[in-house]
Length: 390
Image (tube, rainbow, N blue to C red; front, side, top):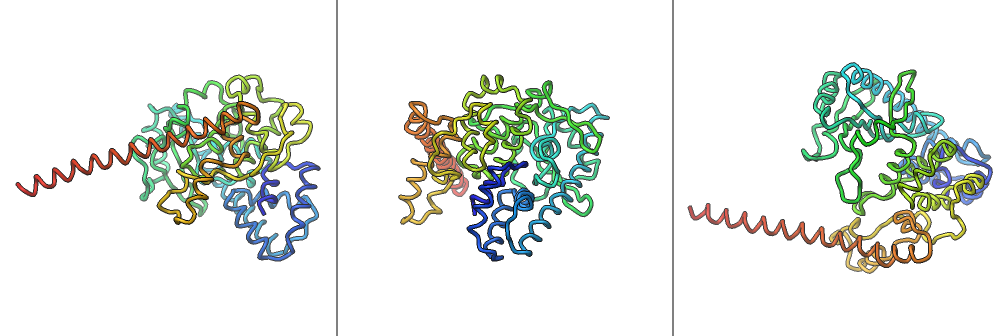
């Protein structure tokens, strides 16, 4: 199942990829139950539309009901994204009239300038990046356009984006996340306000309306950081993040400034070379970029599944040894993607020093958090006792 989905994590296929896809699909009997499981997993990973596209390209015998379900999911994504395009055009025009600079990021940008068809790339929300000084005004404009703040949320006041705003457009809910920083405020991530990327922003059109997003180089780095170098407590990567990077690189391989990428993020090419074992890079591209795909790692596609992602209190005692193993000895594939080192001393340093150091930092973080909670609790109990005596 995972092999089929991984191979489809790209916009455009090629001969070698399709040969592998036919082979991987052949292990499934033409039963609806097997394909229903595949489609459910594809939805979770955000690649149902891509699965539909590539299944149509090869002579694979799948049940009619499964094919119809894939088609309906693709059509739903296309309809939803057309509504989101309609929404974002209205917002871009309103911001332009008020002199507010904005970058469209993540799904709303990717589906319009990376993918060959907007229905191929699903999205949860529209992500907009503005200056912090424009944040209040930008939100007021959205409220004037009929958006309302989400009632149920857990967004603190100092978060990197405001409380999500919502509106029904063409009968579909459209959510807006208004960012003043591109990534969460976490030591794992660099600070990324609008000012960092606006001067180098890429222009693209949505239904004839000009919009801006991150430069190609910034987009590549952002998708990598967001999908594959997130803090260990964040949800594991999804295959749509693989598809974003593979599709971006293949479409713009001759346009991307690879010298800049190598200088600013030396290990990035090492990391994305590992995607070859999920969905193969074309031979010409891997040679042009010098991607090292000689040695296949173990644990291909397996994300980090140890602590602190999995909480000790949620794990049965009998499974604690497995949790410890997954914490200390994650898959080689994940380690190479996360730390960007493939072999030699750099790889063993990542395995034996960098990763244990990362775990140790999380231990210290949790210890200090628990210590501060107990300290506050002790002070509170003393206040309660004093007030009771009074």
